Image 1 (cartoon, one colour):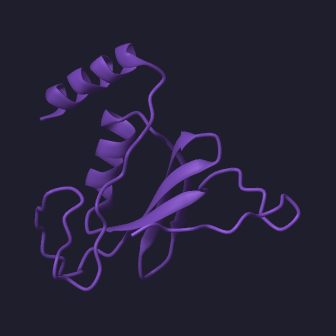
Image 2 (cartoon, rainbow, N blue to C red):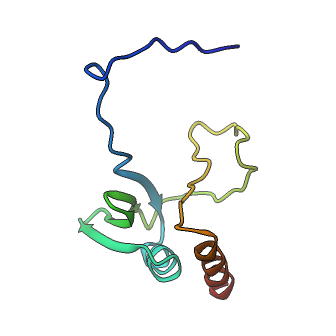
Image 3 (cartoon, rainbow, N blue to C red):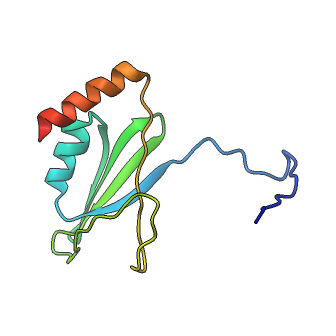
Length: 117
């Protein structure tokens, strides 16, 4: 099957600058902060607290964040699956891919992740 996309003109298409944020759910914000800020080194740029949940934003580049809603009592059953393979559940998230400056930065991050275990 081939998808044919009609041509667009600059006047009719949005001027995208990227994805602002991705919102995910966690049951343990403290562990999420330790991993995303402490291990990965993402800057914690915003926190919102309500009686129902905490909502934190981690920055991975200019105006590029990953946000988490914490629902501590949520019954979320962890599971694993191969990347790109559909799952029978109604909703799923496959993976998050991050860019680094170069291969040296990747090797340094691999060491940080191994040390965090």
